[in-house]
Length: 561
Image 1 (cartoon, rainbow, N blue to C red):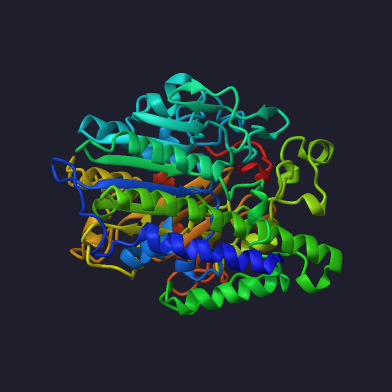
Image 2 (tube, rainbow, N blue to C red; image 1 turned 180 degrees about the vertical axis):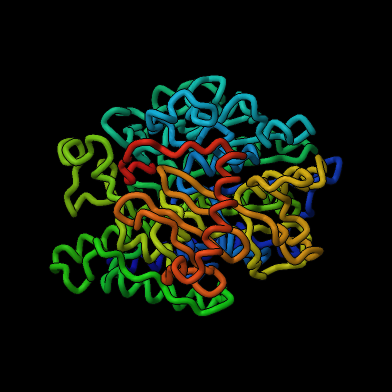
């Protein structure tokens, strides 16, 4: 069977899963709310998925199960997260800005002046209660399956942070098969925990996307007779590098990207405009200087590069299949119709050169099989690089680990039971800090408002916008800041100042009007110096209120994990 035939056959399976697993049609089993009438909640946190990757956002990758959530709900076009995974995960589960939550920098990456300082502990600090703990105390069953990356000590693991049942990899990532190999030489083996117990050996047929989904299904099934609502947090690792798949999925996209990343970025940009995800027709940020034009690559280079994107796309589709399995179980149990579903990515796509991490330049060719024939298999180590990441982030600038739009603006989809807003696009500004207040309000724990008079970065419930009773999540005076690895930004309304450290920066603040230029192509700092000064004052306020300590030494920006 050819690669294209296998793709067609597997696509038929995907289509059937979409129909069986995600529909909220009238003929499905009767919705079964908790005994108190509160909704179930399912939060799906994707890893390294870019703004235009999903079908609902214009991408060509087949994601019918996630797309159905958008058809039933609302897709956000101006939703923002942290620059890398740990800061986003800390904010998602605590509702607190990551510099105050213990992840002011990634674990093990603090500069000398940050080490030992409050907010730079490298784990989600124990003084903060997670939304899982809050929901659990109010009567919710709480489950977690997937990547944790918020602390290694037993007191910082999922079972100690509010989850009744959990299966997690504690590291930033790992091999996606049973070998449990780590991402770098100094972490040769990843740590998995099952309800707090260290897993010494994974099943021989383990694959991360499939197994994480199966564990979440197991947790839900085990309590199938309960009338209590549930909160489930599904955090799969793929498509976080290295891209590895069971053999049957390796050729799902054979030949699909032979025309290269320049052509794909153009198609994605056109698709985003056609989807009306942006209210204007901005310029797309041009190809980065360090990325070779596709037509300048040799035939062998093009072949290898295209294979990387094929594997990335297959990883996303394979994950969507697993999400479809979860939806199918919920539907069969009569739970799907009364489940609020949130789907978002933890940061922009991964475009950094992973060979620059630690000793990878020497360790990868010595330890892994990097041949073309082995790409995507058990002992391969594949990541797709800046050219493809720019396409995944289209039309935005840069990608993961940067404070530009490509690093922080991600897909976010919410479907609420009976909301009546199926298929809509929400264009108001929102952030990951708004998710925890939304979950608490759905559970009836509070009204989702932020403290009166606060101008710090704080979240606010999305429910008024989701229910159509408000036109924006935050008022016009709201400001939001970002900082990581010295990259920093401050946004107030449509205006944004941006400081990129290292080679991508210019050594000073740049200014962009995102209403007309979300691609951040036209620096307006020289034209509007008073606006820069105004936003700099807001930045200083953000630094004071969130205990931001800029690193005192140059760091390798490729370390964003």
